[in-house]
Image (tube, rainbow, N blue to C red; front, side, top):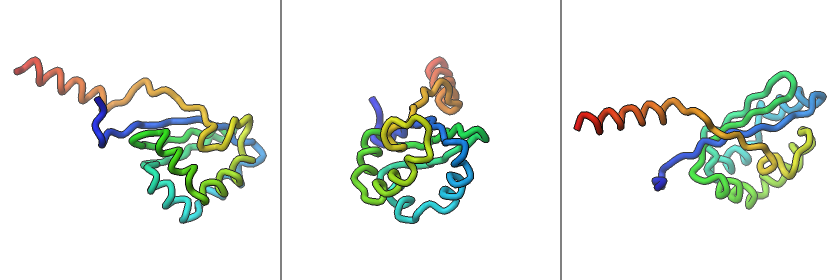
Length: 126
């Protein structure tokens, strides 16, 4: 059972159009303060975007519940404006950027495996 404070790590992929890379970077150097506050208020924590030279974009954030975080943002006016402006930057996007991304499956997390070793060691020594 997941505890109420459990965090889910979400990693996703999008493709930025090659001719829009400079503008995409520029827009993310100073994201609207209202958008930043909305992300935080709707549980998008430790949120980062990584952009490769060919436009491959990898995003990462932590949340208690992805569906709730997305629904929370969908309910804000600032998100509707931001998504409308940002949608044009992406290749083959199915929906808005914050819902149309390809979510990646986590296959390794250091802390989870270290915790498992510690728990197993504690059980065997009891």
